[in-house]
Image 1 (cartoon, rainbow, N blue to C red):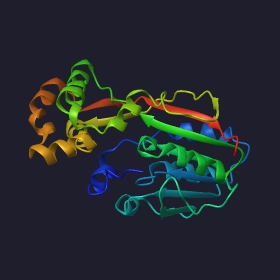
Image 2 (cartoon, one colour):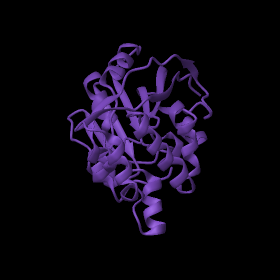
Image 3 (spheres, helix red, strand yellow):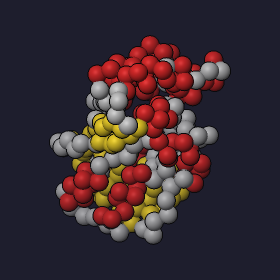
Length: 247
């Protein structure tokens, strides 16, 4: 399991988008039981806090102590620094496993073995993420230019799994249909630019070149933004949902 986000965990917590609460309400309602959930690769606890209202206990794990330090303290969430592939979670104890914007960093074979070990019969695995944000035609074109032309060589090769909507990852579970939920935010231009600076490829570009590619393109973004102080930002969700059949 790779860790590319320690070192700017506060920035990540402040500017990254979350996920729609309605998704987790629907998910909890569809489960055979709602006792215990495991949010793997929890980062700063975004998904764990959305799971907490629906489960008696949530285990939230990550390999980054810096990310975990940013997570909000909630009574029924237990945070711990553990790799995805080997945890101290009890056998046959979990009703739902979630992985948000993280599974592309895992050793999938080892992780799926761990999922099968900890899951109760009939438990679910949700693999979740989001694609490139959408704002308007002009901003979207600049984001695509930054993503592909400017940052292309600086993305880790695992990033392609997100670009493919996680459709190309092995998924040895009985797959279920995952409904679409809107994932919308009202941001100003500065928030957008600060979000772009959380991209791992931007950090790598800065490290290699000593300059910030977002700052270089800031004037173009300002021109394309338009007269409004804020704009609606859409993060289209990607994901896979399956029944964990066990070992």
